[in-house]
Length: 603
Image 1 (tube, rainbow, N blue to C red):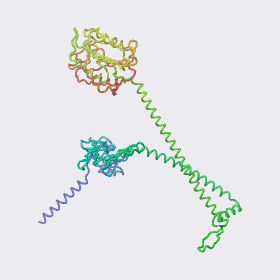
Image 2 (cartoon, rainbow, N blue to C red):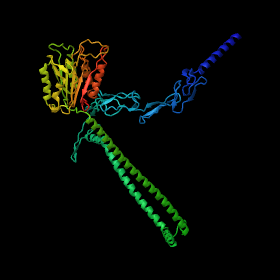
Image 3 (cartoon, rainbow, N blue to C red):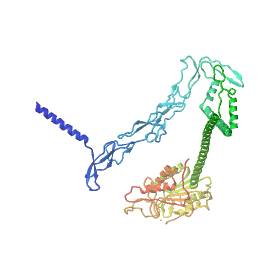
Image 4 (tube, rainbow, N blue to C red):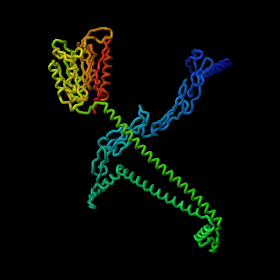
């Protein structure tokens, strides 16, 4: 029996020792000793501590407790503890502490009643107040806002509140009355049993009185006059008037007191001879019960003579007291004057700062306006869209049928009047462009021309296989020929090949392309030319349309109202470059003589 007991006690001791070692052991982290350059395993610091010095081959990790206002929740090897969160740091006092900050836990804060903190914000926001006619569907919490709902038929809410729900209309029939005025979602039913109407005329005013608790016309008028909207401004004006009047009275009274004090001081200061003292003593005695002070209950008169020394001492004390009071009042008056001057200075400074802010805003607005083309007219302008698909001898441009609709939808969303043309021969194509150059664009802010066809360097082809120089298509809109577009942006977008070379990555040259190249530059201001490819190279076209047209239409529609045209065209160029084609590389080209930024504002 005893050997088994010894064995049990021994096992218990072993388990307790191993558990103690487990509790005392700390997790390790690998660290390279900068001196010996050996890999060592350092102890982590416990929660509530931070690492002051890392371990080395010869020494262990040195940990220190977190200072006040800091914490570390887990085992760590941090160089310093985390700073505890501060409540009401940015919440205007609408947040209170729920869990205090300790060395091992962060401070937890919660919004006050009537406020909540959204997930993605850091500040507490007041719960939404449901307007009249709406009641609280779901009350707000510390994490969610109040949800309002329009009062259903038979219920109403006549108050603005973040907690009040819709209430049921009063049932007049239960009270044995009938409905005098039926309620709605903003007011209750008005019940009436027996109505007695008396009309009395006084000062051209007619008052209607109803019995059984029915609100009268005069009562409604009084209720309207008691409305906070009417009362609050009156109270504010009254308080301001009273404060100004009291301030004026205080100033006058203080000035009179100062004058009186100075007069008394000067009067007493003038006493410098025995004769003057005698006169003052005599006057003092005459003022007090006929040169005597009656202090006997039997009305026996006992004189109390006042000596010169006593009167001088009294006079000195009175003068000193008056001087101290006068000096204190003077200091107070001077302090009030300085505070008033400082207030006036601060008000003037605030007004000056306000004027400066307004000036800077006007300057920013002026700079923005002067650096941007005007885009305020409706419609914005004319957008001419020409799409040549079928040709006499050249190959048809299959898959390009949907490009016209894409561009029309994009420019109409930006406020343009779209005019679409298909398969124009040389004469019709030139005539269409010249007609737009001769048209009056005075009521427009911009002009757009989009041409989709076959092409070669500096040219596009008509449907009868005739090449037209792109510069010739832009000439009708020069200032000397189209004065109504002077100073206005003229935008041209060309989806056509500009040569026969292929933009390639690995040297392959196959697939459909719009065929034939020479650099060209427009020397007129306010022109923009966007090409689907660079001069000398073909432009890509797929079975579902041209990538350049698809990206241009989508980006203009999405970013036209918010981004500058140059930024949008940079996006188009980037989209072209992102085309997943292992054999070919694609890039577009922009040429601009615009003097300002182009924003297609839709507001």
